[in-house]
Length: 335
Ligand code: HEC
Ligand code: HEC
Image (cartoon, rainbow, N blue to C red; front, side, top):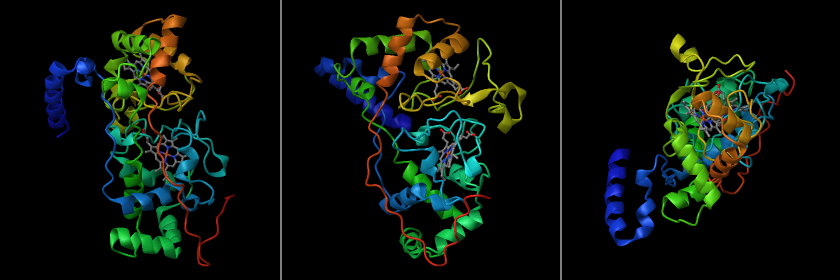
């Protein structure tokens, strides 16, 4: 489907090239494609999902929402090495951004959830994240009349269940794409959208081989790759990567290639949050994945390019959450 669309666009571009030299840098020749803005089909479900994403009452403490660790004011992450969850539990792995996560082949660093809906139930019931259970979370929502009314409008039943809750959250998350980055403007033919340093950075990114793993619309997210192809990555993290899902020794230390969209905002980097800055991450990638030691100037150029991947951030009115009722269970912050 996607390929068909692309080839249609490809044809259109070929014709346009003949007319306008502006299209000479047409993106169909590039390993990175611009992000397509989303068309919201089910507005009611998206609005419900948005409320649930921001609602801390889905956690046992009544204090932690999806947005606590995937802060949409901060690139969809918490900017911590690894996340803090229920009872100040520090988790084992860094929170990836939720921005553009719909473009990935699967969810989580090891891909253990096949899609956003399958993913969304995880954190609610994870003792170290939101520390609740699906039954308690759903039961709590059922005591809030305005949620029951909204749920009924969206799903045609007043019996809230986890299936609907996770579906609505996923539907909201699908809207969190970030089109219109300066790099996308360049891909679409605006030669002045990026400067010469940034363009030089892109050339280095392409010619050094970064695009072998970081490509496509999300500039990543399409494959699992070993961290430490040329030289092993040193970390105290116990994460085993894809091997934890497949049980295959060959998949040890393979992770889903992270998206580099908005990477300027999503520090610190890597599954263990081990690289504090983008320059450090680029240096490590060069040496460990490609056996290349970049000069300081080269790293500066690549970083400049990576910063052109910051797109339009989600923009909407802050959702106002319906109040609890007298029947709503009290939060349990310390247990
Ligand atoms: C306590 C912090 C925390 C909370 C709360 C939290 N998450 Fe996460 N989230 C994480 C961490 C850490 C990971 C990575 C876990 C892994 O890969 O093993 C993650 C992964 C994800 C991913 C996968 C992204 C990708 O690129 O693979 C999505 C999507 C996501 N979370 C959405 C949500 C939603 C929706 C909620 C609320 C229902 C939520 N998260 C609540 C910390 C949190
Ligand atoms: C062989 C595949 C491969 C190649 C080649 C590669 N990367 Fe990566 N990249 C990955 C994987 C896998 C990760 C995640 C590693 C981890 O978290 O342990 C990653 C992570 C990153 C991150 C951190 C993103 C984040 O959100 O944590 C940056 C930045 C990055 N790569 C940039 C580059 C650059 C620049 C190059 C070229 C110099 C490059 N990569 C080459 C596979 C690759």
